[in-house]
Image (cartoon, rainbow, N blue to C red; front, side, top):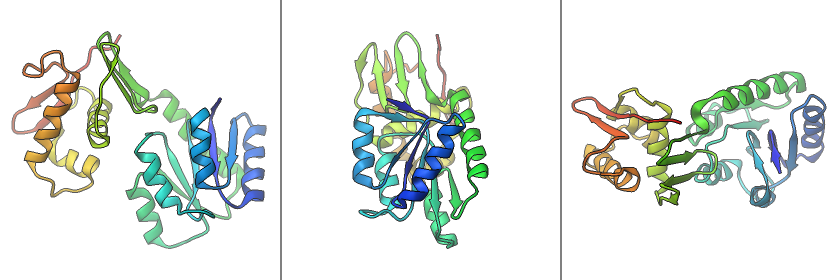
Amino acid sequence: MKYDCLIIDDEELLADSTAEYFNLFGVKTAVVYNASDCRSFFRENTAELLLLDINLGDSSGFELCRELREKTEIPILFISARTSDDDKIVALNIGGDDYVQKPYSLGVLLAKVKVVLRRYGQSVNKGYTDGWLKVDFGAREVLVDGKTARLTSLEFKLLSYLIKNENRVVSKQELFEKVWEDKFTGDGTLNVHIRKIREAIEREPGRPQYILTVWGDGYKFVGEKQ
C-alpha cells in the first residue's frame, strides 16, 4: 500500500494522534513504533515522507536514518524533544531534510509536511527515464535496456545527484561535498566511480552520451527524456 507519510516514533499516543490528525486532513499516514516494524513496513508498503524520532525504543533514529538512506532518497524529517544543536547537525548531515522540535503544533507540522510532499511530488527528483535508461530514486533501481544495472550505494548517489542537476555542470568539489560529504576526496577516486557508472549505463562507455566530462570544471548529465 502507498502512504503519503510514515511516522516512526515510540511515543505511541503522540504518534497515533499525529497520524489521526494527518489522515483527517487528507495526508494518508501510517504509524510504527520502532525500527524493526519500520523495516517490516517497507517490505509491503511505500511512503513519500518519513517523520522519524531520534529516540526509538530498540535503536537510534540516527542509525535507522543511515540504514534507510542506503535504500531510499525520500524526505526524512526528524522529530525530537532533544534541543542540542549537535543533534540537529548530525540529523542533517546523515541525510535528514529537517528537524522538528517536540512538543510541536499539529497544525504547523501538517503544513510543513504538505509543503514537503508537494515539493517532492512535483520534483524531477522522482527519477529519470528514456528509451534506454531508467533510474527510480525512490526504489533505488537502475534499468538499462530493460535490465537491472548493479551500482554500489555510492555510485547510485553519484548518478542520482548528476541527474537531479541535469544539464548543469557539477564541479568535482561539489560532488565531494554533496555526495561523499568529504571535501578531501581525491580526483582519482571520483574518476573511478564515474568510469564504473559509465560502464553500467552507457551504450558505449568510451563515448559517453549521458555523463559528459567538462574539462577543468567537472561533469554534466545530459539526458533524452521521453
